[in-house]
Picture: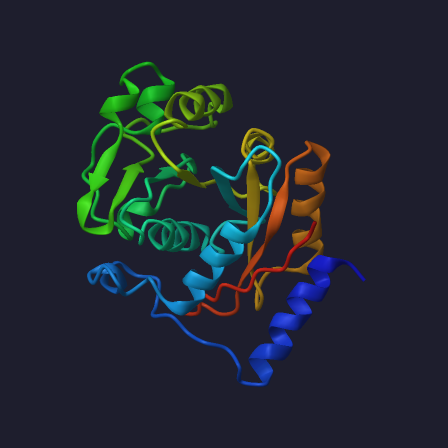
Length: 240
């Protein structure tokens, strides 16, 4: 029995026993209060991330799902905001799901230059970073240019340029089982967190996503399970 299957099974058992904690629906209204998404579950996820030992340090973290619509953007935002809760911590949230970006529905960032504009050489790195002071967070949105592929080389160059400016870079990535470049991005970061929806993600899809990341040598930190549509727990199962 695989560890991913065990994680999914454990989440279901916990839900049946009524031990689950809930966070409000993943809508923009849930984020009007800066503290709304900074709940105990995300603090647990933050603590799990900070407790991990990675040889070169854990500064760049990619969050990906197996398929579309599993809540990756919401979890990435929640983790970034939890990490940024300490005012001295510099956190950047990067939206790298360029084909179906959704961060603008969760966070009040202006429609401006973003990652796609940088990848096409139309904007400098400094021009694509938006500051959200009330949450101590810097954000790189998807951008104004539609994209059919993710420029992995551009992301790698951008990370190299920004790594001295931020303590953590949290990346909202495309689904692994849909786009091949998601795994390639995973090979360029310090760690990857998989986001699965326990009531929806087939075990075969979850294991396929993990195999693709393993194939490129990505360091999988664990799994966050979303148990139902309005539920964003921070259950993290170490896969190392």
